[in-house]
Image (tube, rainbow, N blue to C red; front, side, top):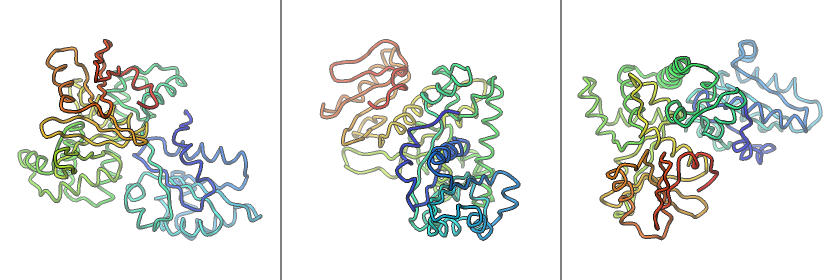
Amino acid sequence: MIKREKYIASIRNFYDSDLIKIITGIRRCGKSVILGDIAEEIRLRSDNIIYLDFEDTAVQSAIPDEMSLLEYVNENRAEDESLCYVFLDEIQRVDGWAGACRTLRLKNCSVFISGSNSKLLSREFTKELSGRYVSFHIRPFVYKELLAYGKELGRDINLTDYIIWGGFPKRIEYGSENSQRIYLSELNETIILNDIINRYKIRKTELFKRLANFVFVSNGRIISARSIEKYMKRSGLPCSVTTITKYIGYLEEAYAITTVSRYSAKAKRELEYLFKVYDEDVALNSIRVLNNRYDLTHNFENIIYNELIYMGYNLQVYNDGSREIDFVATKDNKQYFIQAAYSVAEEKAYEREFGAFSKLDNTHPKIIITTDDIDYSTGTVRHIKFKDFVLMDEL
């Protein structure tokens, strides 16, 4: 497995901090691998390391709760007074894990934790750990990482494969598309059932699953709780806007989706009642598609979103009162207006996508990203080819 230096570099400054280091992210995005890489890096300068993987039945059986974990660390750390580095993978399996972590940080321990339960991956650890933590959101592979891991496995990952099947690391270990689909479908079921339905004790499981299906295939689209309510009613599963808002929150807390606010240039405010939704990985859309009719255009936009987030940009959707621009991307006090279009080869698509910039001045750079090989740059709009964009580190 490749070393994901971009993430590790952001964590490195906290290696010796008494803050609890939380590695967060959707299930199977590679959190445990990063935790292991950090442990190996620290092992080069310290032998005072304890690493426990609570997916191991023997570990879980021997250390089921807070007190047994504290006792184990106390008995197995170095006898000198040096800082002890404690790594706890799948920590949510320990009863009273938060109390144990709070105590360890007071006992000259640098604590690193990760896990797949949404209780660990959501706003709830804010209350559990009372601000004594720093969190790092790990995401599935972007294209550069996918290429690097594919090279390790002797596989070439093309851009179409990426747009359809996304960047969950383990999926490319499976040779056939059918095997990948089975793996991703089982992963999806685990996220929906274990990380959300069981965690939040959702009784209306059919309602939630139908809503999740709708949201995952609506990636890259403007939606609202009200529009989802109408869809559910037409589907014979009526529910309230309050319930819909709550369920969308559950999907976000499990890092399955992100909702992006629309910014109104005219009103100078966010339009809270409408938002765009992006899947954490486009595979969550593609596994729901029949007859290979994959949603390339919206998955393409979703990929652009994921890549820009990886590059470190803050994103909003821009609305000038009559037209939407996909992204306003901000980083280091620089702002870019970005349009994602699968292709502008046809005249209507060209006019529509480039026309979105028509009311903007030239204060900030304007960019359009497409899969086209022809350079469509103009005097005011920079065209970036998708094959070049996915290899860039910044705009």
